[in-house]
Amino acid sequence: MKNLKIEQQKGSKVVISGELPWDDFKVFRPKALGKINEIITIDGFRKGHIPEDILVKNAGENAILEEMANFAFQKLYPEILKENSIDAIGRPEIQITKLAKDNPLGFVITTSVLPEVTLPDYKKIALVVNKTKKETVVTPEDIEKTIEEIRTMRAKQDLFKKMQEGKNGHVHDEHCNHDKEEIENNKDESVEDIQKRIDEKLELPECNDEFVKSLGDFKDVEDFKIKLTENLTFEKTRKNNDKLRVDIIEGILKEMDFELPDIIVESEIQQIIHAMQSDVAQMGMKFEDYLKNLGKTEEDIRKDVTPDAQKRAKIQVVVGSIAKQEKFIPNEEAVQKEIENIKKHYPDANEDSARNYVESILMNDLVFKMLESQ
Image (cartoon, rainbow, N blue to C red; front, side, top):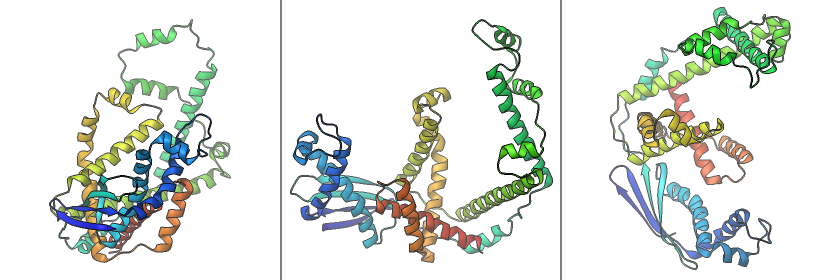
């Protein structure tokens, strides 16, 4: 690294500037060429098998240099943070100041860091909250309620199937109009009334050995209830533990007052919106259409999720500060195992980015387990 300069700024920000010499920068050229080779289309050549001179001529030297810079920063940025003990959080803003063949890669990186916070006696707070932890109990009423929900779900599935197959004595076609008549007769019905009318038509199946065997690998009703109890116990325990963690961290936050860097909140907002977009895409909808149905703009969504994003950002700061104070270090074997698991599902995942993600998750787990043990 050449002329590396690190400046602390207001608002818990750090500005890193410097240059990566050409000899160190050019090692990323094969990776950049390989990636572009896989995505570019040139008549007469198969993807991934385009000669370098043809590839450069069609893609352009600037595109290759930009891809080289992407690979360089994936490796360079984590190394700078580690070597200079910078507790960065959120996504960095990277500005390239020099990008040319046979020249150093010039850059300016602005990143948010953990703000200096004064932690309260978090172990004492955790101790008080832990005393409120409820014992996980699955009652016979819980079992019967769940079985009733399963029977109702199966009945609705059967009713819908019969309606589609015309087993109610009539097959709907373009000539029938009784559905229209029924709608006209019941146009003042509320959604609840319609749901009630449907529920009244349901014929719930009997919970017998034959029924539970149709649900999965169960010997009989008794075996089903035993396994259902185990599943409900696991689910209730998980929910109780999640609530305990939330109560502990909220108890700590009540005793703290600090300013959040904007970039951290913005990073959380982007993550929430991205998750929403993914969920909408899985439903087969475009996000724009989803917003139209809600009668909202993306700016409206941003405002809606900002309080949640701010809370998540505060939790991130507090957990990171506790981990630093406790000098927690994730187990390297566990880190490697999780990285390998990520690479199985995402072969192109950058190893440094995967490591940062895994270490963050494991570090959070160490902090919460320590707090839960008080």
